[in-house]
Image (tube, rainbow, N blue to C red; front, side, top):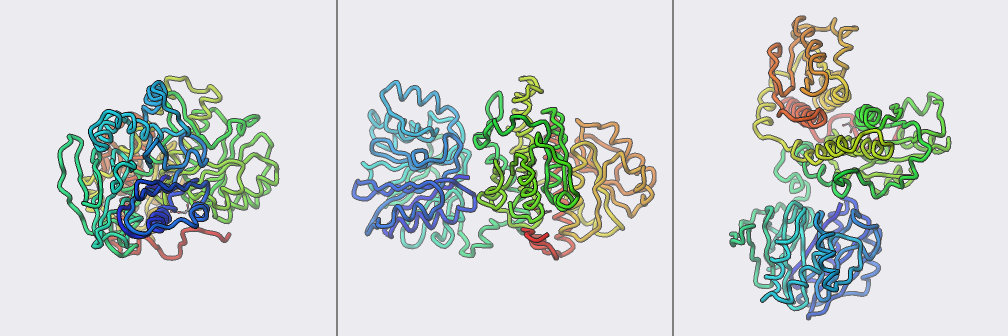
Length: 604
Ligand code: F6R
């Protein structure tokens, strides 16, 4: 995903900008650029690919004395990853960098073209700089032109803009995408789209709020809110310790990553939702020509994402879908047919079994695709096509946000194929796109719910085992809930389809058997309820998770009533993640680095 940095000060600016961009590299990007303003002259460098390419281009460029600079790593959404589409974007005398999406860019672009503006790139970002210069013709000051520009933008953005007539100034704005401004004892001002870019360079920062905008110059920072009122500069100290700073006040990376799901899901959706269809810029529709079957293959949590997707792909796209555990697939001499698209799912892109399965599928001549969180990983390099999940670096060994983004991508893929194959009508696709737009808000952690789970966790520290049960997509979610608990609490837990309990496991039912029951309102409610009642009748201890009251439960976690089971899925996912984490914390375990586990399993 895109990253932004900015600098106002006297040090050699190129190094500061590129070092800052390097701290944001983990988010993934496909091009990068910097623009430096000194003595009313701009210097611009852009390069496709990694930062090393940008460094080579800017090799002989150095500054001494005061300058301002802005930099960007771009993750292509509107327009391919080319130098022309890389940021910073130029007007006549100004440059801009931007994260997010300008939703009304087409309308603004048409207006500006009508006024004689020439556009060089395919990006939505370029309209910002031209709109600014359009207003500059009549505004009293560049800042007034900047303010007028912001009033006309809709969508999500974090923006830095520099104009040659104001040599010492960066204009900035934040609306829906993160932006942080920091300062240090040497009187320098820095910007970053994440504080990772500022650690070690600033001692205090302001996490800008939506609607905040202003300018930073040699004289300091002026900050305004969305009602154009001046805002006091409330700096908070920035830790110098990279690791603890990156935890941003959370106790564990896992906790931070659970809370981050709302942001990373927005990133995952970015540029992929149209009103009527799903758009994957990275996918050539020809990939699906002649395909009559999909085989999903993965390990662990990624396997659970695959299993969830198998319901959605068959239901929405009416395509035969099977799911394979990679370590099994490799050795079971599978029967493969050339009309099968082989999709591997992996957070790291390096898991040995999944990688080998991918190689096998390629050897059989199948078309292949990977859904992955790490650009340039072995699987991304090997597969015919790849879709990146954009979860950002996941530090907690127990996967949380990567799972959320995997299921999100796979849900989008099911709708993309439904559209291609005409298996869902337009109204239903539109409805589901509306649901996808609601995902970031759905996974936002409600502090009262978190507190309830923290208190509840003390009752679930013993017992002879946990059963997580659910039906339909809530069965893979139950598997994932059980895996999360096992990994970090070291308690025995199993995921099971609710309807299967009476075929054996119900023999275990007694008060020391804890059942975590997923009871969504909008998918097989009555059926699941009967299964839970059967367990309750045999004295199992039941913790139900549902938007509806359930009087047979010992504990009840109430989710919000949502309009569709997929939103319930994501809401319950957060509940399961937090519950496992709170149990593990009470047991005194190292939540981020549980015993015996590694983040990337590169051996079979
Ligand atoms: C569980 C977990 C693992 C991974 C599995 C596959 O929390 O993280 O089960 O999902 O090792 O890893 P990737 O997705 O990197 O292939």
